[in-house]
Length: 100
Length: 501
Image (cartoon, rainbow over all chains, first blue to last red; front, side):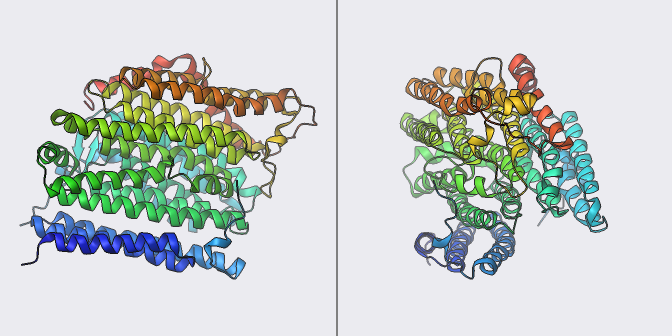
């Protein structure tokens, strides 16, 4: 029998990988994918905890997270496409019109 | 296995302001399709109608103090007051937007539905009594704002601000979500009252659950800290505020902040008395952490604002500073016995800030040109000669942001500093008072520009009919709270009698 801690360690590793991706990656699409990885790490933790506690709350939470992530994809990709159209680049280091 | 609740069990009456607004948003979205392009003002009228209905209904169910939707929604005085702030902000923003959208060529009916969605998000956030609802409300609040920030899509700055806000907002949501997952793991439930009930037992033991709980609470604080822009999670604020269309900036600076602080007060602070009850250490650490963050936020916000030349950017740093002041109230709630007073102070501060900041942005909008220029501090030179009334109101808003007596800002600061002193946060209060003095420097500079500097004076062609309504409303609100503070305090007191604590 696998302990719940094993799942949490895995999900924490995924979460940290995702967070590092957001900080280190320069391509907006990859940054966005890293955010999705963080959300899915949280999903894994929720499902593992739901299994541990034997309740439904965690499973229901995951469904809502999936829905919200889909809404975020819709808005995020639209923004990235709009930026690409006007600048032919989605490198987030080049987003520096405003400084100070 | 699953009980299907009856309609009566859902207790929909008390949720009506928020639920109605969410449904009304869809109506606006559909009706807007049939409104011809040159008559989009009708969409604005429809939106205002819906907001007013929600506002009136909110007054009727103000302090009903009941739970609804299977215990996931609390309609108490606290959520009533947050609704009040959110709806006021939305109504004024609606007036601000009508002419601005038209003259800058971004008039789209969807703008109003997005505004309504975001407002509904704030309202659900204040009333949420379940981690799932808090998360959904946070997203309903944020996702429309990402789109609205990028609404001026022909302007590269607006696009950039939208993408920056989106990436950092989604990043923050992920932190919040992971924190929520850990809290669920520690307690086995997502319902806030049940979490609070089990916190005491978990903190007393030295188990893995305690680690999950502490880590989870910290991650939730990081996630919400991004939303309300406290140091060190504030980096996105100036860029996003500068690039976004000005009505959106105005709405973001008050409504998103109110929503974030509502969730912070509910999640972090109402849980803290439970932590205090058993171990003295934990509360001290919590309160100290929040106090340090509040102090850093006030100092950085106020000092960096001094060197800004763009008014929108200056107001962005000023909004960071004000988040620090409200956070001071959040820290004060951690002391036993001060919780009620501090919550009240934070709420009244938010209401005062809502009126004042919307008014300040309204005047900025009056000066802004169609291409988005005209928002430098130098553009205010000589405004007292070209538009005397506008200059008087702007001066009043600036004094209110500084916290000069007879303005709303003074009442908010007075209550907040009082609560912080009573909570024993003397050093934090001193920092608060000193940074307020520093803030006078950059707020008064605008007044000096308007009254003492030579200059033609901007004609302020943006001050159109609807924008003037919004400016007057904000001015009236700031003045009334400033002169008759007992009105706001009584409003909150009647709510608090049966209310939160």
